[in-house]
Amino acid sequence: MTQVTTPISTRPLMQVHPSATAEPALVRRVLTGIALLFIVGTLVLPLLMVLYEAFRSGWSVYQASITEADALAAIKLTLLVAVIVVPLNLLFGVAAAWAVAKFDFTGKRVLMTLIDLPFSVSPVIAGLMFILLFGTEGWFGDSLAQLGIQVVFSVPGIVLATVFVTFPFVARELIPLMQSQGTDEEEAARMLGASGWRIFYSITLPNIKWALLYGVILCNARAMGDFGAVSVVSGHIRGLTNTLPLHVEVLYNEYQFTAAFACASLLALLAIVTLIIKELLQRHQSVGR
Amino acid sequence: MSIQVTGLYKHFGNFTALDNVSIEFPTGGLVALLGPSGCGKTSLLRVIAGLERPDSGSVHIHGKDVSGLDIRDRQIGFVFQHYALFRHMTVFENVAFGLRAKPRSQRPNDTAIRAKVNQLLALVQLEWLADRYPAQLSGGQRQRVALARALAVEPQVLLLDEPFGALDAKVRKELRRWLRQLHDELHITSLFVTHDQEEALEVADHIVIMNKGRIEQHGTPEQIYHAPQTEFVYQFIGSSNVLYHNDHGYSFAADGQDEALKSYCRPYDFQVSAEQQHGSLPAKVMRKLPLGNTIRIEAEALLPMAESAIIDVDLAHNDPLLAQIHQQDVIWLAPRRTVQFSR
Image (cartoon, rainbow over all chains, first blue to last red; front, side, top):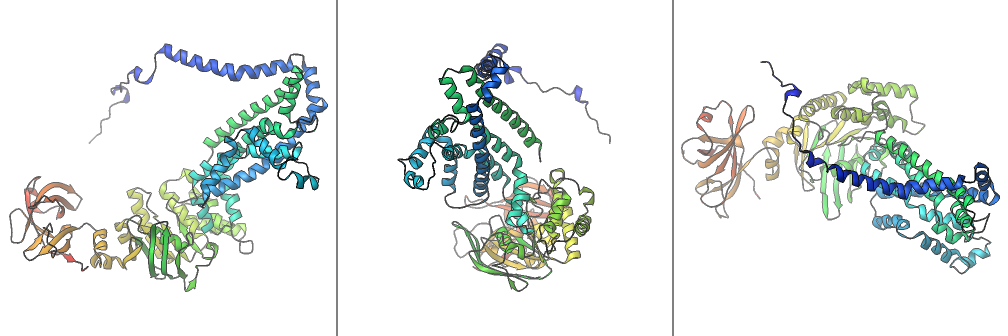
């Protein structure tokens, strides 16, 4: 028996009434227009303004503003903080996510809540906490002073505050992924005789690398850009404890607009680079095995 | 190597997964752990593997207590239900993993690893897929890679958790036969978990039936099928009908009589007729299901009270009676052979 198939073109088309899947043209245009206006007004225009103001007095002024001694010190301090904080939170984040996603233990919910805490606490409060703990009037202030260690109004305080503020980024990125991947592969590796460390670096790590990198990028962006917590603990000592965001504020308050915007443009640049890397990573993540 | 477990208990919160399980698995056997979901069969397998720690009890492999032994020293191959292949490694690297993970002193050199992996891939007939990634394989191929990977470390014992659970019917059948052949070749003591009685009867040379964390019965497939020792085993291993036996003969309902003895009858153990016979019970034909060589009739027992019972009856597909029976007809059933279990 021969099989007769109807060519696709002659089959009756499934009728979908247009109004079932689309809004009238006017509504569509108005909605799209509002969304675009919103994005331009709140995201694009401010960014362009920063760049415009930064370069308004010309390239040489721009160059002078960002190579001036205090600005350089602020850039160095910002980089230093990021270099210390990001690896720390990479380590904490991976450890916390590994514990939460792959093991069951009492107090797991408490740990999850603690990981989220920095997101729910205002950065200014976070900064104040460290002052209360390590300031001269604080709990540990005296004992630290005797040891000759200054935390508050100094680099250690800035690092601590930044660690606190950026703590959730890596862990938050990893936990859902690791939970969805389950523990099957780790168990399989264990059955095949792999040590705990080997399981981690040859099974777990390759499976989370893109999410991990993504978390690190976000963590870094926040570490360099945080203002609130750092502002409280730094003490605003020019050339010593001012990070780049703080330096921008100081310049602005002193009416040095061009210099302020020049420094701000560096942070804006960081944001743009971060977004681009993030976009590339997400593409990789969805394509990657 | 023989596996012996003694007095195993395992609880998960309020749930009892293993309730005083003691059994010895014969050396070189292919054993099925059979039971409904939640019966503890997977827990037993994971306890033997060392992936789960029992609350009490011990596990001996070839006479050696492995309870305190690290998983790595138990020399057990484990095939996971969803294969658990390393997704970022090629088939070759997956199989080689166990060899590469060995301590430096025991690790074979690269040439030896290559030879071993190729030999295993040949065994599972997948040499041509060595450079693929797990995501590029079919379910049956993944299962075979998982098996090759488990065999690479030359385990004393092979444990398989629902090895055919996620495969479609045809591949399943092929793989079952293939596993049977592989076992006959390698003679490695193997345990596999399944909830499919057909699979257990077809593949295993020894079946352990579990229910609610306990072992109901174990023995050869013949013993299990032809001499079930408990009601649970009888009902689990094939279709069955419940009858009640009292002074007047059989009935499909207890009729509130406490002394009525519960009996079981297989669907093919009825004498079926279109007219009433001595000792036969009436039932109304609801559906006829063509199951190939046999035709199953689903009939509703005609009972004096409001109770209802669906009776399964099997007839040979060429039984002349079938032509006479139509839906809603009344047929008369006389049990030829029934089984009782004392309580």
